[in-house]
Length: 166
Image (cartoon, rainbow, N blue to C red; front, side, top):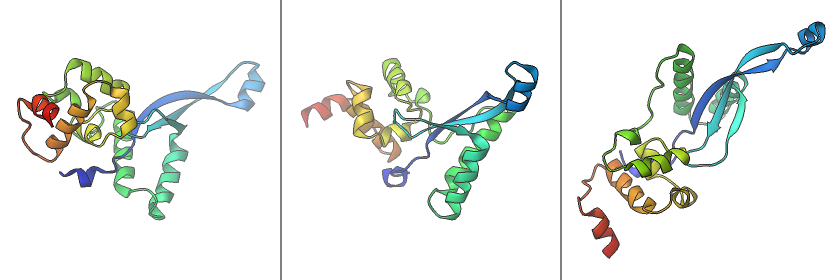
């Protein structure tokens, strides 16, 4: 898979249940009465920003955007599959190669990537400048290794030394 195919990755999504107030029952009982509601938390790869919405409303909007060709249909399908897995309590399908399985990611790099909401090698390979800055020292070399990995090119053992000379 080349970097050209990865220019735009689907946003990271997480799901959670929150209690929304049932106003009529709250007034009737004189205390808070909640309705369990599924929420989606959407985070563009490497971004600090999040969008939080009621899942059923959000996915309906995304399906409309698919019809208007403003949102990729594949992304919508991936997010729905992830939601269904979350509802069933099963592991979510992976949309890339997990960083934690990659031999070139040190424990420190994994912590930095996790803090930057980067979970796959493909997301790291397409990280923007802001994300690289948040990852800290060694981020450019790590990103270059990820790019080589995605392009299915070998990563030399002395990669850091070769890169430093250039």
